[in-house]
Image (cartoon, rainbow, N blue to C red; front, top):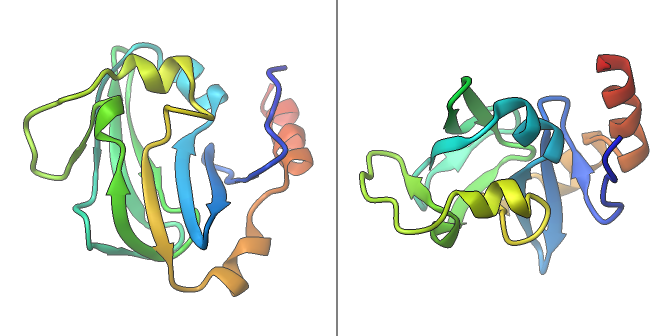
Length: 140
């Protein structure tokens, strides 16, 4: 099993959430990336858009599938990782390299940053690294 970083929380839908300076950086786990294969497109809600925990945050396409990205916490989109090829909803020009997401999903390959609106009540509902590892083991 791949190493699951201990400095963040996880969702059952294989997103990670890392608290940094009061904001929540969001990405896809290595498990999600590996199951998707080569990424071809990553789109997220426009900057300023409000999202609810568990609501659709974006879309990721690969040579194998199209999957939704879900918000681990409620908040407002304040930044997206254009250097990793992430584009805003309705955008057309990919300016970065999608390989960054595949090669460094827990570092430079983050997807979006949220300004959380219900952090205190929602953060502890996310999976701990240990709980996420258990989920991965159960999924096989």
